[in-house]
Length: 222
Image (cartoon, rainbow, N blue to C red; front, side, top):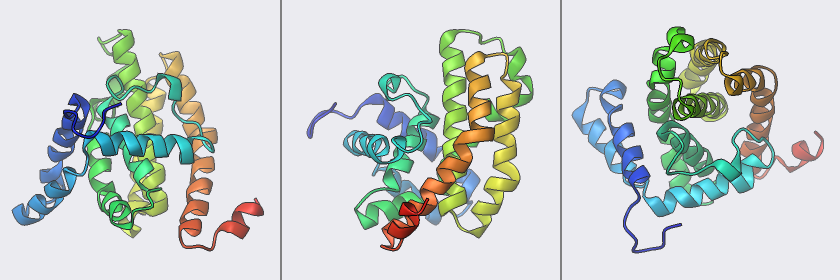
């Protein structure tokens, strides 16, 4: 893990660049793009590592979507790294940091669902990239999609909530189903459709109430 003063890791720069590429899809207003871009520089190596730890400590223990022992920021897809980082940010005790993450959920969604995994899902079963690395990247992106759908459904604005359930969730299921030639992706499909999504939604709703100081009784009663 990097310490203060250490150089930025390649994955931090790659995350910022990939998010920045989606800015024109979010708005054509150059001024707004610049405002959004300025917040991307919050995603430095030290913060990413801290928020990944927060994700594992606060979120993963209740809903295990990723495999912590094999989660390496240098090796996972940028989409999954970004999703885990943003989910961790939703648990931040820093109000301004949490606010920046909430404002960036639409950009995260755009980046994740613009990946090759979702843009070409009708042809995934016939992909020429049958290497272990290619399959793992595919699986990473599916996990990222699951996290984004849950985050938008629970924390997004009205439009984002509707889009998450009416559009993105369907894309996630179809991409997972199209990838069923890979055993790991069959597992992903089953977990997204039957287990992970309802469990994570319940978890997030409790956490949102807890952040407002009124979810303790609800959590105890479940």
